[in-house]
Amino acid sequence: MKTLVIVAHPNLEASNWNKSWVKELHKNDDITVHELYNTYPDENINVAKEQQLIEAHDRIIFQFPLYWYSTPPLLKKWFDSVLLYGWAYGPEGTKTAGKEIGVATSTYGTAASYQATGSNRFTLEEILRPIEALAEFISASYLPHFSLNDTSDVTEERLVKSSLDYIQHIKTVKPVVVK
Image 1 (spheres, rainbow, N blue to C red):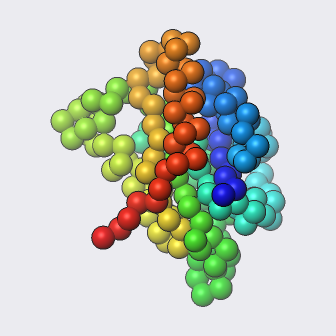
Image 2 (image 1 turned 90 degrees about the horizontal axis):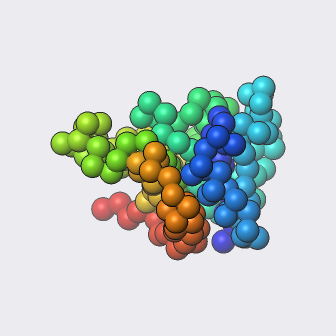
């Protein structure tokens, strides 16, 4: 299975977690890493190039830090620009059918804060529901997300474990079965 990880972090060099994940991803020949903010510093997305990348891969993982309960702005722009009618959906839009789509996200908040009774009031599953809906809309399968909470707690041991767990997740996760 060919996997594409689309990394959307506005300042990857300043991120302990996302930078560590990307470093570990690069050690895997069967994973293509595509850094949006690096590729498009002017935010002028090459739609044809992006669509070719999607077509060449079976599994697409969107990796980003949670920003105000959503994706960073360039990833939202990417969704709007790349996943077009007639290509990703609509009568002739079959290019994403059968793909697998997942999310890897990091949060500053603790796991407990992402519960109905927590300070954020919603679970990560609920917050990520728009991406799950996107996957369904473009006839892709949705994968359970990978997340790392409490990113202020940085230790070398935690960085290494998280990075290895992330690779394991990408390689073994199975699509969500909708009943």
